[in-house]
View 1 (cartoon, rainbow, N blue to C red):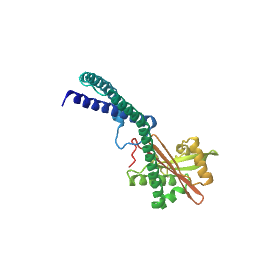
View 2 (view 1 turned 90 degrees about the vertical axis):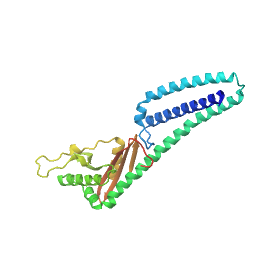
View 3 (view 1 turned 135 degrees about the vertical axis):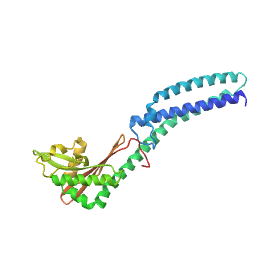
View 4 (view 1 turned 180 degrees about the vertical axis):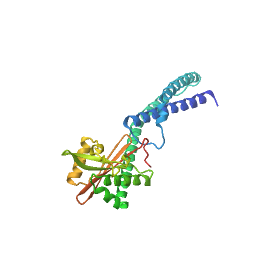
Length: 267
């Protein structure tokens, strides 16, 4: 193998390595900045060592410099067609520039598919409660702020959570009032058991649900108009689903939340 061929192979390997590294850094920056959830594998820890990427770029630049110097030496003994090389370089630059919007589109598309998959799974979880655990669902919808209802709700949510290790976090949202002020209460399984014989009665203030204005507007619509509208939101790996359950004049909202540090289209 003559020196010219070695120089060409070295240049090709070096340039491909640098381009792949640029793509890798671009993908990471896009995923981190926009909070996209696309990959199956855990990659964040790798990029916490981004300083290594910078050093790799510097090292790559040094290698490319050496390669081009070797190329110049080789060109002294070989009369290459510079016009053809120039055309190929321009085509390569155009392909490189066009590829970034394509990659960006694929990343956002993957994140969208991940969110839609998660939405489907959360809705299936809600529907399974209504259909497979209809008796328990009826107990939940028959809300009254009493020790018995709170304890029953705690038991039901614990059972649902322990049935499937992949079951999302679940809460029951109801509408109530404190001192004539309408508000929303949220009940989770981690509040613990309340003794019926305890002299200290449960306080509604403990269960007040913190909400944003859009969330309050949505919940008011559900409880006042008895709407069955489902609300799903996804942001930076946090997935939330509000699933109304209406029976007669009783209304509750099943609230599911899940967090995935790494998005999976197939999860």
